[in-house]
Length: 167
Image (cartoon, rainbow, N blue to C red; front, top):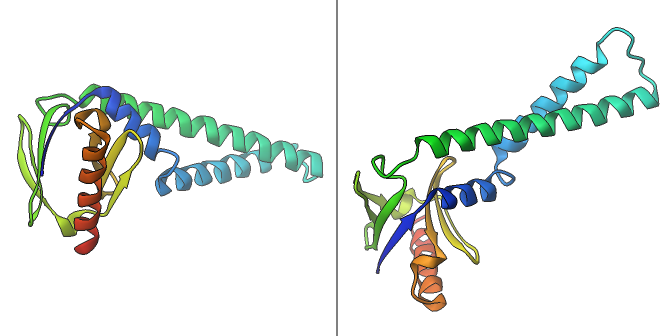
């Protein structure tokens, strides 16, 4: 099977929005910030360990960790969008071919073969097929790249079955 897709910055934003709340790293970062903020608030002069003070400390730490995590995500997304281009092979035309050995990719910048055993996960949702190679490397197949819903589903199912066979 062969598919040609055009990856845009909008696709990268969708990918980031999909994985940001689902990433274990996001939650570890959030928890570490929350604990750090709470420790800082708790050991400031004048802090009493009453119910009211503890509640205020927890709420303030939660809000601080949430805002800090969102700022870090927006910063990372901005860096990704600024550095991604067709010359690097991230954006633009991608040709993929499903072979017995793996998933072959060809762009203006590179050609590669992702062996089936090198694929961690395949996710299929209504707009994208997402292939996770590792924690931070993904391949994305927008629904718009397929001529019909049945071809989209067939491609996703073949990817899933091949990746699961060799897991």
